[in-house]
Length: 158
Image 1 (cartoon, rainbow, N blue to C red):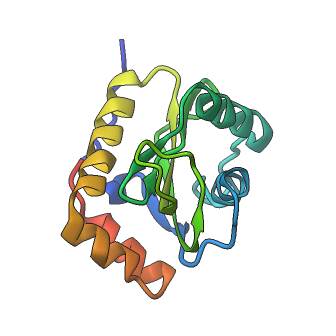
Image 2: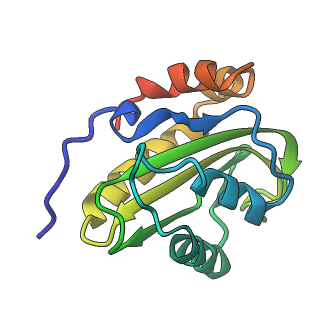
């Protein structure tokens, strides 16, 4: 039975320090590593190596590039205590082998406890809605700073 954390907005799982605009990485694996580096709340221990392996294994099973320039690399892990999100906006096109064949500029990295499949799906659904909202995507892609990107993402309902 999942202990469902009340997640109403992305700000419940996303911190300003976990948003990178610009994202410096030029490859899928480097983008994932860069976002893992800023993922957790201050002082939280995220086993970066183990979580990176889980995320990359998920990528090998099928690309998380969902189209419209958005990727949502994600994994559940017993070592994650609560859902966490990091976001990056890349000024360069990153090849995530997306479903639509287009490169990615907006990357959301989602970490969820192994015991939270409902929260995992709820958050993925919210991020998928972001990817299908052309007006919102234009605004997010036009962000000129990490803070501006965070401010736009924070109020999005989950």
